[in-house]
Image (cartoon, rainbow over all chains, first blue to last red; front, side, top):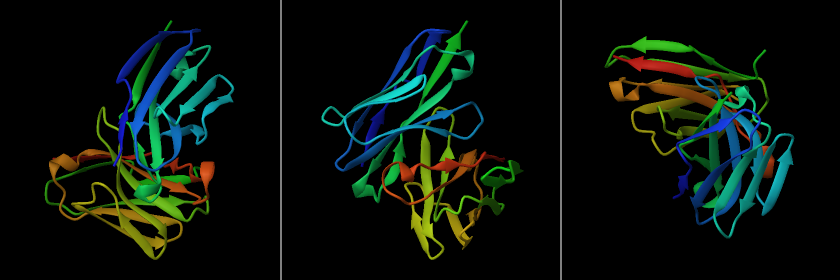
Length: 111
Length: 115
């Protein structure tokens, strides 16, 4: 089984940088995904990490440390439209490569 | 047109009724999934299917059943709905390839209220 922890809520200011952390415990790690979900809408894919290090994609970056069971999503130059929930999901070999989702972090961006 | 569609988008039903939620996809993916999401909680896997002849239980399958009618269609049934099945239900698909190919694509969701 897995245990995935994310902060429940975060608040940041438009134009700033915010880091959303995710810690996990798993016996057969096989990749970590970040999804964005606006209220009442479907989750949409943001990033994927399977090796240690930083993956950059425009204003969004995601970091992984497998030895620490830790990932973060970094959002730069925050915009009001970035107000959403951010879901961390871990794929585990021992669970048929299914994804297990964290509870999500609700980010509120203020002017 | 959306790649993954769900019908209905909203449904109100009464305790004990049987209901079916339907999912269709035009992405050509073999793998399909049903999740439920409760307020403030993450997505919980109900059932998944890797191809038309393959059905697997997820972490919370009790009270639910599924049917994979074709590669493109995967339906979820609640045989006798109960109030604690009130939730937002998502269908998702994936290619079944390694790495980022396992990215799941979600439908718009079905909001279900059981009275």
